[in-house]
Length: 104
Figure 1: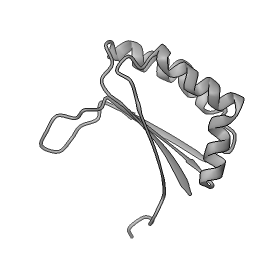
Figure 2: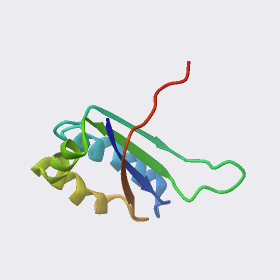
Figure 3: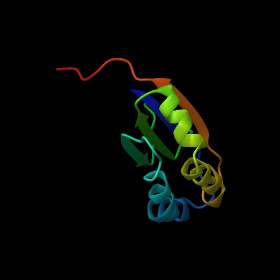
């Protein structure tokens, strides 16, 4: 499994970010070819300190090649182009192999 992780610093208007993200951006994300799983969260908190992030999204693909193909596809280009429509605080995009599993 290979994961794409996007961290969003606080936007100028959190309510507008949330509304646009949930009504428009996530619909574009759902069209990414090869996307196996998608999760997101708002109002991120840090233990013992202020969080530098407002929102997180993670999506899982079968492999690094599958993730790269998705992001280079027309759907992936549409997702990337849409970020400036809501992420006034910018975004940080990371990716990594998923290692380990659930703890029983």
